[in-house]
Each structure stands twice: as C-alpha cells, then as structure tokens.
Amino acid sequence: MSHSDYELKVLAELEQSLSEQDPRLVDVMSRGDSVSWWKRRAWRGVAGFAAGAIILVVCFTGSLWLGLVGIAVMTASAFVIEQSIRCLVRATRSTQKPESD
Image (cartoon, rainbow, N blue to C red; front, top):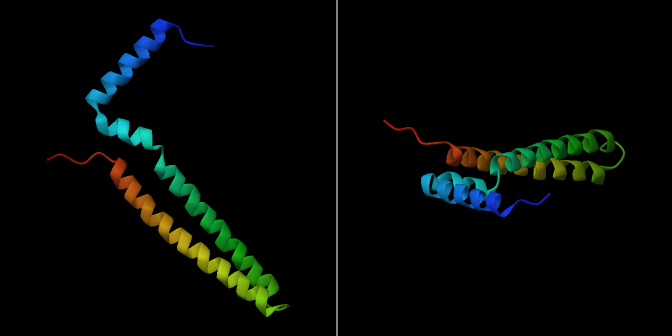
C-alpha cells in the first residue's frame, strides 16, 4: 500500500523537524542498532567457545591434532568475545544521554 502525497509530505516534515530538534538521535538511528549487533556477536563467540570445548573434550583422546583445533577455536572465540564486550560497552556509552549537573 503506497502513501498519498499528503502523507509523504507530513512524514518529510516530521523527519525534518526531528533532525532539527535532536540531531544526535537521528545520527544514532541512522547508524543502526550497534548494541544488539555486538550482543549477537558476543553470543556467537560464546557458542564458538562451547563448540571448541566440545571438540577438545571429544577428540583430544583420539587425535592430538583435533584437540589442538578445539583449543584454537576456543582461543579465537575468546578474542571475539573480548572484542565484542569492549565494543558493546563503548556502543552503550555512546547511545546513553550524558548526565547534566
């Protein structure tokens, strides 16, 4: 369903008004939700770490090389988790409104 010309004009006026009143909000909204993106990346790192631990436990007794692959996966996932948490904290701080005294 398409919008009428009147509706498009009203939406354009609202967008212009919002960008004049709160440019920071417009900037944050136009960048997308970086907080949820970093959360998803951190959880993927946790899943990768768990998968590496499973590979290590299951395969280490049978094959030393597969055990080392598990350790490598766990190490890489730990770096992903650490980086994601740092960026998540930074993104959370940038989206919060600063306190005024």
